[in-house]
Length: 389
Image 1 (cartoon, rainbow, N blue to C red):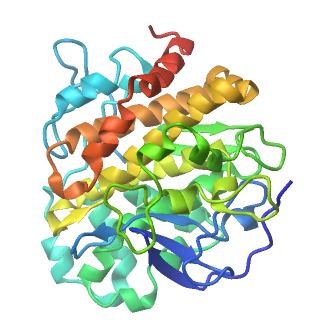
Image 2 (image 1 turned 90 degrees about the vertical axis):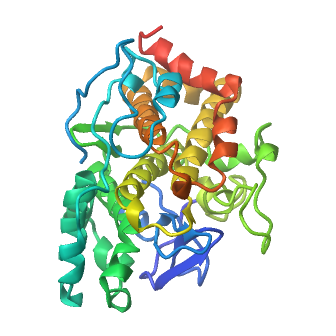
């Protein structure tokens, strides 16, 4: 078994391939992910969410559930948050099933933050983040505050160093990164050694067991997705060739070979694949709430769509090649529910942002990949196992 080596203290952040990664003991531009065998190892390094791309200025809670349903029984997902897209939600979130059960209001960019920005002082950076999130995406506020309170390291200090607090703009350019990373810190601290904890939405959490690829876990390395029939449809981005039309996430999240003795990101199992999926939903939600500050385009939609695609492919590979893993993910209510709830929340926000061209780059191509009938069938099989047909 490969075991991740003991970490040194984090030394800073670097940006690569449209993503930001924490540079640690491996040196610059080396993302060193975590696994769930040791809290110290888990919090040593984290891969960040998407950063702003294409000539942009930005950087990389939700309300209560039980929102208004449409006349056909589907949720009214075109309301609130971003643009329309209600049809997208009906197509991907099945009414009456678990994935169609979350009807929270979308994050809003309507609340004014101008007074907070005008009155900013660099000694109050955290206060600015918390107050803006309270107005725009309350779940993000929860994740930042709880990530700071419960994490073994201070996610705010780690991902917003003093050098990036000189102006309100600098701070708000990093607000999505803070939500994403503090969300990791919170989930990992809550899970502890008992399992993988997921804060999917306010009041909707799951803590599941057996999902690691190490330390007694039952799942396989996510890097194996690089060998399936779907990987060539969106290959790794070649170095120096940009990120359009290729998978800029693969080198960060799917790297490595589970048969060698070197620990790399792709050696992690389904638990951390799903952890990233949950945080990329929070990333999209945060950027929905901050969309009025976006110039150019961001990879907000691309990130979560990529991880929905990875999830479908992982389920398919498990079903065809690793039946024990598939039995765990399908038949354990915790894993099945975590997948369906996260899938549904992702598509709710994707529907709300269907017309927000600034929040996606290759999102149209990624939607087509996720909509592959064979891959959508994997989600339908979980619905059936959940008792929804």
